Amino acid sequence: MKTIRLLLGIALLIPFLSCNDQSPKKEVNASDNNSDKIEAYYFHFTARCVTCRTIEAEAKENLEVLYPNQVKQGLITFQSVNLEEASGKPLAEKLGVSGQTLLLVKGDQKVNLTNEGFMYAVAKPEKFKEIINEKVDGLLIK
Image 1 (cartoon, helix red, strand yellow):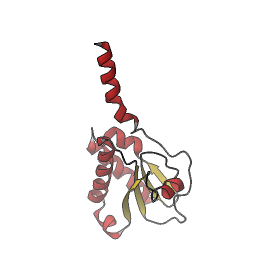
Image 2: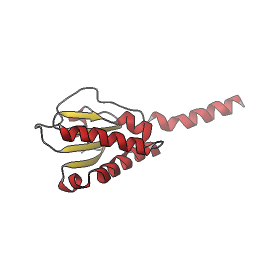
Image 3: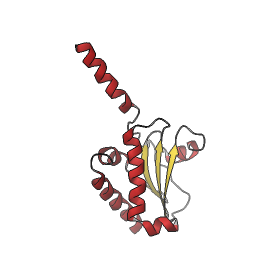
Image 4: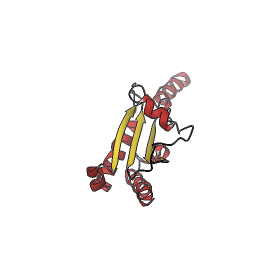
C-alpha cells in the first residue's frame, strides 16, 4: 500500500518538474535602443503543462484587454517563443532566458513576471491581471 502511494506521488510530481521557473541568469540589454515599445515574451518548451499554457493565455489576454489601443498601434506586443525551436534560441540568449519565463521588455528594462504567473494565473487570474496592469503602467510612465 505504501509503495502504491509513493508511486502515485511521484507520478503526480513529474509534470511539475518540467515547469519550474527559470529566471534570467544574467542581465543584458534587451534591445539596442530605449524605445517606447513594450514587448511581452512568454518563453516555453514544446511540452507544456496546463499552468504553462494558462500563463501564456492569461498574459496575452490581459494585455489585449487592458491596453487595446497600444496593442493595435504595436506599442505593446506579445510573443510566444519556443525555446526548443531554432528561431527562439537567439532571442532567449539575448535576454538571458533558459526556461519558462514571462518577461516584459522596454528598451533596456526587463520585468520578470514568471513567479507571479505561476502563483496567480490559474488560482487567482484577477490578481495576475492586476500585477500585469501595475508592471506595464510602470513601464509606460518611464
